[in-house]
Amino acid sequence: MGLLSAVFNFLFSCSDGKPGMLSKTGYHIADDKVYYFGGLNSGPAKELNGADPKSFESLDEQGFPESAYAKDKHKVYFEGKIVAEANASSFVRLRRYFSRDQYHVFYLNQTISDDPDHFEFIDEDVQKDRKHVYWADKIISDDPASFKLIGKSGGLSYYKDASGILVNYTRIPNADAGSFQVLDHGYSLDKSKVYLMESAQLQEVEFADPASFKVLSAFYTSDSRQVYWRGKPLPDSDPTTFVILSEGSHCSYDKKQAYHWDVVIPNTDPTTFPNGKRCKYCTNEKIVFED
Image (cartoon, rainbow, N blue to C red; front, top):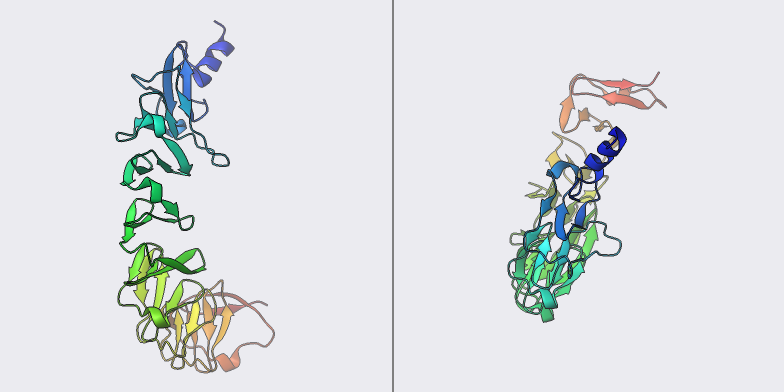
């Protein structure tokens, strides 16, 4: 075997037909054996012992490139692992990482529902059957009858059931559903509180007044009393004269002082800022304007 041929076999297949390190991710059949290769970072391809190559089929989903699910006449597989409770003869792929047979619904290789005939997608993220509402493999509500989508904003989805409000899979404690409003940039409010969903963590914007609360930009909000940077009050700020100097540099000011993020920049007098010149950058110590 020449050097070039040896290198080709090493990269794309071994002498026994086993997939090589640059083979396509997914299932391969060679020499009456079935293999699963998870890609470059997953180690060598593994043989699926007991798999029947004659009835084996990869269950690809159109528009979703990963060949994760497969089955033969006896078993179902997800990424080369047996889906223990799956019935091969009735198994079908639903959408992305969801599948079902006549008895169960599966997410990845885990059983999530025993009510497949009533399992349905509310939207791309949320599903329900007669007993539960799911976010992937999480049960997020036991009230599918009244569960519904109330709004989407900035990659977040807001839902309502008889127990209250959820943002994605996180329930907002004690939120008042009757007065709840979805705002921009991760904010929402009800008659008593303002909420911020930040990096998958829900927080209340302390001291914010829901009745006068406004979202000014991705980083700045205000109410009748003060201004906030991502939910943090700007000290002694004046919302009536507040100006965003540079969103990218997180620089702002009001009639009395200037701020970087939620920090007061010392020794700055907004009345001395040069007219017509843009802010070049801003730190906790100074503001630099373009020449």
